[in-house]
Structures are given as C-alpha cells and as structure tokens.
Length: 112
Length: 502
Image (cartoon, rainbow over all chains, first blue to last red; front, side, top):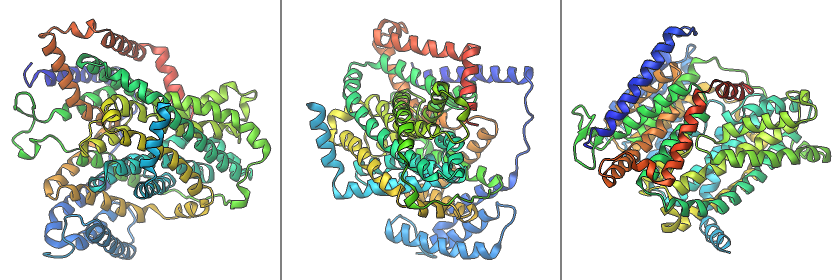
C-alpha cells in the first residue's frame, strides 16, 4: 500500500466510467455539442490573470478599473461610458472595503 | 434534561453581541443573494470563505450558515413576485406562487412562505438538537473500515439524489477524489501529481478551486444568456396578512413539507432543492383536486417553502455528527471548518460543545431575524431586482478574485483560479456538474487514510470491510444504491421527479 495504491484504484474507476460514457456516446442519439461562445469565457479568464499579474505593480484601485473594463467587454453590447463610471465606483469601494476595512494584504495604489 | 442544558449553552454562545451581528450579516446577505438571480449560496459562501479567516470559528460558521438558509427565504420572494427563482430550491414555488400573485394574493403567498419557512426552521433546529447527540455517539463506535464504507455510501447517495447524469456525476466524484490526493503523501512523504510545480506540494488549494468552478463559471454562464426583463408585481405591507382561509389551507402542507424536508435534508445528497421538489410532488399527489396546482394553489407554496427550509437546517446533521458533507454547500461549510483547524465530526460535539450548540441556536435566532428582515422590508428587496446584471457581475467577479488573492497574495493563486474556471466551464458544457467533484475533493484524503488504516489493521486483507457489522451494513446500503441506479424504472421516476418543476 504505497502512495500509489488509492490513486491507481481511482484511475481504473475513471477509465471504466470513461469507456462506458464513450460507448453510450456511440450507441445513443443525443443532441450535438453546442458551439461554445468563446468571448465570455476568454475575457473573464483574461481579466482574472490580469488581476493576478498587475495588482503588485499598479495597486488595487487601477487593477479594479482594468478588470471592470476587460470583464465588461465579455458582454456583447458594451456601453463604455457606463463602464467607466461603474469601474470608478467599484475601485473606490474595493479600496475602502478591502484595503482599509478588512486590511487585506494588497497595495492600494501604484508602488505602495 | 441534557439537551435542554446544551441548548442553553448554545443560546448563550450565539446570543453574544458579536455573534448576533454575524448572524444578521449572514441572513441579510443570504436574503440578498436569494433575491438576486444569477448568484446563489454556493458562490457566495465560496466568495466569503477568505473573509472568515480572521474571524472566530463560531462567528464565521454562524454567518455562513445564515447565508444558506437566508437564501431560501429570499429565493421565494422573487419566485412569487417575478416568476423567477432566485434560487434552485425555489423553482417549484414559481408555479403556484406567481399565479397567486397574479390573482392579487401575492401578500398571502409571501406570508405563508415566510411563516412556513420559520416554522420549518424551528422544527429543523429541534431536529438537530434531538438527533445530533445520538448520531454522534453512534459515530464514536466507528472504526476506519466503517468510515471508509460510510464515505463510499455518502458519495454514492449524493450522486443519485443530485441533478443530472448519474454516471457523469460518479466520474466527477472520482476526479474530485484524485484532485484531493495531489501533493505530499502523509504516510510515505512521496510527492504525487505535482508535475514539478512546488506550489502543489501542499495539495490543491480549496479556494481557487471552489471560487473558479462555482463563482466564476456561474458568471460566465450568466453572461452567455440574454438579460431577462424583471418586472415585479407590486405588493404593499398591509396586504401581507393572509386570510383565515389561507391559514386553514396552509397549515397541513406546512407540517407535511417540514417533515419531508427534515428527513430528506439528513440524507446524503439531499438538501433544500430535492426537498422542495419532493414536497410539491407529495402535495399534488394527496390533493383532492390536483388540477388546481399550477393555478395558484396555496399548498404548492406552503409545502415546498417549508420543506426547503427544514432541509437546509437538517442537512447540517451529517456534517456535524459524522463529518460527512451531504451536499456541495455542506462541503463548503466543511472547508470553512477545516480552514479554522476544526475537523468536522463527532468529536466537535464533545471537544467544542459551544461550537455545535451555538450553531444550532444561531439557526433558530437567524430564522426569527429572517421573518423580520423579509416581510416588512419586502419592498426594498424587490427594488434590488431592478439592478441590471451588467452592473452586478464586475463587482461579483472583483470580490471573487480579491477573495482568493487576499488569502495568499501571489499570482500562482490567480493562475490556479483561471485554470479551474476553464476546467469547470468545460465540464459544465459537457454536462458534468462540478458540485460532486467538490465532495470528492474534500473526502479524498480522508477516504485514502481510512482505507489504508483498515488495510494495515487487517494486514492487507480486504475482507475487513465485510467482517465489521457497521461497515457491512453500510456497504450493503451502498450496493442497494448502486442497484437502484442500474434499475431502469427507478431511474425513470427520478427523472420525472426532477422534471416536474422544469
């Protein structure tokens, strides 16, 4: 019973289930896989990564604005003026709540 | 009266100024997210987990529990007034609740839903107080093989009673178990599945996983759908009081719903959603005139609304006594306890009685708060509905990422979050619900530990699982559950039960 004992059992179970699902996929008729709309998922993921890599450099306030803009673009119709106002409100709120209120370990502004 | 003394201890702990405050915060948040479509209790609890780090364990559990049962109240409001369930457990309430509102009986529907929920919440609290201790003492006789079999049964039942394809759910559970094993093996010190990434030596972090797979995937799914028009049927506070006739028609369904909910909540895989569906089916079956259902029958509101609340309470029983999370929300609560260094299970009741009983007492207090929060302030909650999602989602996304980043300020955490967002999204697209995976993830290390310990005890003989009576009983139950999945007519009725509301 080494470190690989339980993982091996689990892996066999997954292989078995995978085979069953694959077999059913060939024999049963079902709806075809829908086209995945790439815009929402990709922009949301980009905004998460942008947050992670930018916050140390430009601080929470500016990162919030950046994230709001990228995420807002995930919708089809974007009203940029609305987004700008929203991003500023959010930035103020996040800095007040998380940096000053809950003293989370992140810089509020550039270089600090 | 031991239970009485215990409850008194609990009330003393829960009624401290700080804990009352956190109960109120939890209830308010729960109602808020219950009202708002597009964000449910799972992402909210996931989002708030990081904030609970700095709190006292009891306070954080009180707040998180408040969110769960608060959401049951808030969800009914939108179902009745807007025909849009804010919460999965309120889907059935739409059918008759909204019809009642269109007939000008919105007030009665809302009041019956709130009062029924309150009653169910009280009964649920008593239920926990009564059944918690005996179950916990039973659990103390459990040995490693018994725990292993219990977890096997729990995971299987959680899968059968959940939505969606059973086989895919089992696959997700096993994937979750495997994810749970990533990192350094405690017994041998061997490093597993890290692919040379040193951040994975301590295992996969819980937060990036749940926030990515629940919080953020939910946002992406909502963004793909068109924003719906949300106009509410207006109600005034003075219209809220139901008539005597309403009361007469509603009290029996409330009782039955409470019973159904309390029992289904305890079962692994049960919980608020299943309970509300089951209660609606029961009410429709025993009604003298089933054709009234869907046209504004008050039973169709009273039963399910009581049932979902009762189940929301009693689903804490397996977690607090056996250490077994019965649904994803309980898995998150388990995560919250483990973050605080508390291993959920029978030991909690003896080592931290204030924690167990304080939580039970806080649920009753919270339910009382919710009636007050919901009924007089209904107008305010309905106004919130007019906030369009395009203003909400950047804020939700921001809270998600800050939550992850705040616990461990490095970009690796954000990369993990992104990876699990993509993974969760693809899985959802392929019809594999991510919820069972979380159960597996949390139970993976525990299952492995108990499996190994059993096999060490028996010197490698797997018969040990059959020789112990408790383990054998649990395994037989697990076998029956598996049989149920295979039998076609059981499967059919399960599908029908879930379609009833869809």
